[in-house]
Image (cartoon, rainbow, N blue to C red; front, top):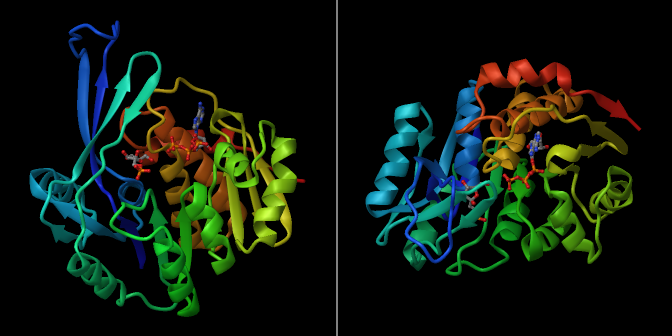
Length: 303
Ligand SMILES: Nc1ncnc2c1ncn2[C@@H]1O[C@H](COP(=O)(O)OP(=O)(O)OP(=O)(O)O)[C@@H](O)[C@H]1O
Ligand SMILES: O=P(O)(O)OC[C@@]1(O)O[C@H](CO)[C@@H](O)[C@@H]1O
């Protein structure tokens, strides 16, 4: 079974304003609401490609109710811990540019955290655990690292999608997969990485630091997979970007969904990139039809 953990779920409120003016009353031209948070996005895309998963994390209030109901109506299994305060609303403002305003999210009590830890006890050897997104202030920055240590020792494949200190901290715990984008990779090494060639030595270093597999995404400019001592690059499909929110999460879902069915890293990488782009070219997350239509444009090369 694949379990996703979203410690700070959200309603993603996507608002489009064609002629946005700061310091004025602006009227919204188009708006939509989706359940969000990185692990939840992974679960929603897995559901789309017919791979079951269970979404864990903390939800609260009327916003938490929307998140849980929408997921269950779509057919995503959930087992959330209920918290006192409202889940956050993250505003994604599209004005030609994309501006994101992410909320802080509810406070978590020691009981809430214990309840999540108890639910995680169900994980067994062979399961996949996806830890994705920011860690709220009520939890220590080492939370993913502790879970990675504990569950890797149990034979669970742990996937971590986070940047900054969380990524740096977790590598020593030998996660199955990490997926930094090139900005997160730059931050990890205190340098500026802009080209596929520049990514290569740093991707290898992430493997040396402990990650079993590494995908470095570069939005429309390429993606690289480091696995079993080999490096692969992928071409990225061309198209009109409608929504890049969740593209990285979709890439993760495409990878683990395909890997869990076929245990083929290269096929999983190709599907991953097609899935990320399928989301980038859609208003909501990727659909199966869109993913299938992009597969041929993703050419994988072994370096
Ligand atoms: N402009 C684009 N054109 C085509 N595909 C894209 C574009 N942007 C993103 N993608 C697809 O989504 C994947 C992940 O994108 P990106 O590198 O932006 O990840 P990310 O920074 O984790 O994303 P996010 O945080 O927005 O979810 C890319 O590998 C690619 O497949
Ligand atoms: O605040 P975090 O946890 O870092 O990111 C949360 C978030 O921006 O990430 C997802 C896209 O990847 C969105 O659904 C959600 O709003």
